[in-house]
Each structure stands twice: as structure tokens, then as C-alpha cells.
Length: 282
Image: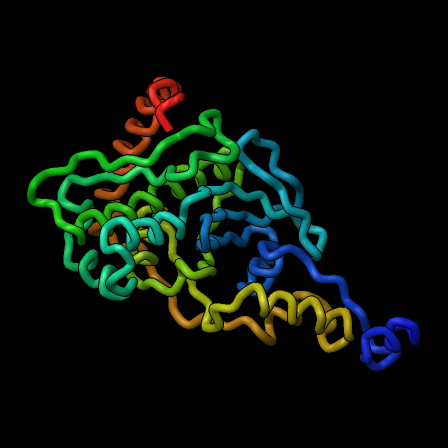
């Protein structure tokens, strides 16, 4: 820091000044996802599926983020990841019960929510052909209760994220495991659902503040505390559990995701018509 900047801020002159990064890049680094072949499921408001590669991935549904160690993070976006869960708590319980209570109700429901599917496109899609995609429940019956609907939301986000992960696989990226971060990583039930839907082990970090951890690693490298980013990750990032795919759910969820994909494709033809019906009705 220059003397002039020190005079203006009250900070000591000469201290190192290190540029930061975006929230996504910091979260990737802070969850230990930095080397080619590593993969991340980061679920906050959105769900970002990222695979680290030596080069950018060229696909119309894939964004690319240049990482600090000269690698690239190819990623897809589901706009309503954690936001779908937030919406469900408001819509199903008027925010009057806690997330743990809703998760407990969902855990008591069988996988597949007894024939109920949810497409989580509450805010459309950012990159896909149909930016006006809509959310929907499919298969509602009188037997379904709040726990069924909430579990269907959790599973629907997993199926949509698995659909996005397949776009990365089309670019030749086949990760062997996923590292979970963001608020969605706090739910063991959701991680179990995702592990079975992706058919991949999922690791979660002991420290859930991955973005802050990533910024700390960057600052540590800039200040000379760590020799490089790999050293910073080794000294700061720890994993507290590994969720392996439940073989009893894997094939069943594969069948569910096939039906999910069919619903996605067939519904696409109706979105423009639905928009036309809503014009002038606000």
C-alpha cells in the first residue's frame, strides 16, 4: 500500500494489497476444486455444476471461468437451485416451519415421492433455448402431502442438475466425484439424493464458508504465506464426509430422470402459448 493510500485509509503503508475474485471462483478454490478433473456442485440461490479442465469447453450451454492456476472451470447453471427450496418453504409452509423440519418430512417419504416429479424452472433458464421455461409438479394425487412435495423439489433440482452435468460430459468431462459447497451442502438428505442421481460420490467440506476460505487462500498466496494455491488448499480445506451413491436408488433415479427429461422436452412446446395467455392479464 502506498503512503498516500495509507493516509487516506488509516492502514499501514507497505502492507500487501491482493486483488480478489468473483464469488464463484473463490468458492471453487475454497472448496478445494482447482485442478483439472475435479468437479463441483455449488448450490446457493442457483446450482452451478463445474468441471475443471486444462482448456475452455466449447458448448452452447457451458460457460467458462478462467481460474487462478491457469486452468478453466466449465460450468452450467440451474437458476433455481437453492431458490427452489426457498420457494417451497414459502409456498408450502408460509415460512412458518424450519428447513430441518421440512427435510425431516421429506426424509419420511419414499424416493420418487410416490410418483411425483418437479421441474424446478421457477425463473426460466439462462442459457438454454427456452429462457421462458416454467416450473411444474407432475403426478399430483390426493395421497401427496407437504413432505411429498418438498422431497419432489429436492429431487427435481437433482435431476435438473444431472441434466446439466451431462452437457459437461458431452465436452469429454467425466468427473469421478463431486465436491459440494454452498448452503445446499448442509443437507445430508439432499446430498444423498444427488449422489444417487449423479451416480457419483459427493464430498462436503468441513468449513461451509467456501467463498471466504477461497479469498483467504488468495490473500495467503499474495502475501507469501502459501507457496501456491495448491499449498493453500492443502493447509485450509478439509472434508468431513463422503456420500456414496445408494445402489438401491441409483437405477430408480435413472428411470425418474428419463421421465424428467421427457417432461422437459414436451413442455418446451407449451411455454410460448402459456406466455401468450398471460399477456395483458397482469
